[in-house]
Image (tube, rainbow, N blue to C red):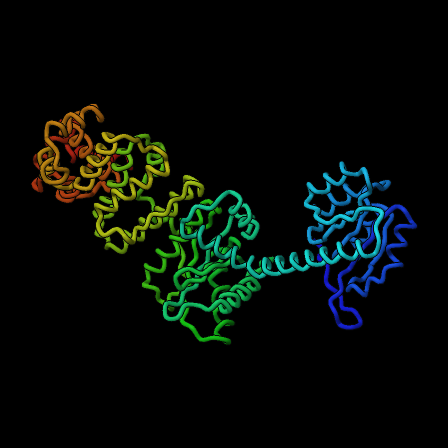
Length: 514
């Protein structure tokens, strides 16, 4: 939108530019030449004989005030006012209105026109209304100056609220999307953090300017400040290219200011998951305790994630329609990791890779971050990851009994390797429920007695673990699935369910592989 600028007269006084629009030549020329406009700090910048003529001249030289008649050929005053309200909202319009033109005057009022001169008129009447129009010009200019100064801060505040999980209105989101890369459909978050002193506003601005130039973004990236972090919404790019861009940005910044700065980048997402991407940044900084020498912190790449997730059966997980099926698959994955003696850090890294892969598997619109780093045991990881997957698949059921049943299932799979696991143990020591009530709830929801369900689940997991590693020792197998270490009871139960011993099942698997 074109904006007018005040001009200065010979006395150095601020002048207001005026365009006169009237189809009557005598009236038009009379107002133009018989009033000494400069005496009233007004500069006449032109005249026009109808609305269309006026628009053409406004495009070349935007006035502060338009004095227009109503009834004109080609484009009348009301049509001109409508056009100005769409494109030149800063222009103040003064309407020349004749007797009997109330209908047109009321239409002008609908567009917010407040200044009218009733014909016939003299210089005093015109000047009095023009002085009021000048005051409105000043008010509008003050408002738009303030708006320009506040707009960046308003956007930063909206961005901050979006990231930290506050609910934004549809209008606020639409306004914010205009400043996001790809209109908010695809972007990454980049955070730079200094725990010692944070960043002053000018430092945030400088970092954004440098980063935008290095990434060759069309405009400086949208940024905000949260808890010692300056956070940018940037174009999607590879971890490698972003790492180089951040390194160059920090090198350039270090020439002006010496600060120890840690950096982290989220996965790709759209504006609907901004809060989840923000939580990824927090998690990444937590992983390395905010060290500034760790380079750009990123989630595992897709290739790295996929290479670390063969412990999980994605097809079975995605086709799951029951919560216990998910619990079974995640417990199985954890047992595989335990069987090869991985450290807690190694297991955490593999689960992080799984989260990345699963998020892309189900679609970014369903992405809900799970902070594996905040989970302090294998058992908690099984429950938290399973509930997270259930949420992404929308298979949670509501109701007190359903919630109670999910809690029972959580306990079963979190204690899967406990040889003392039975109704009495769970009801008395964990859930503090009546045993009979526990049994009724279980049968009503699972259509199977607890003991039969546990037996089937443990034997099925034994089969799947043997499929994963046919050479797994029976002692290891029984330890993982909750049978006594000597293996006798396990072998007896396995044969009852499968029609063969674990050893025979193992040999069949090896023959199949051959």
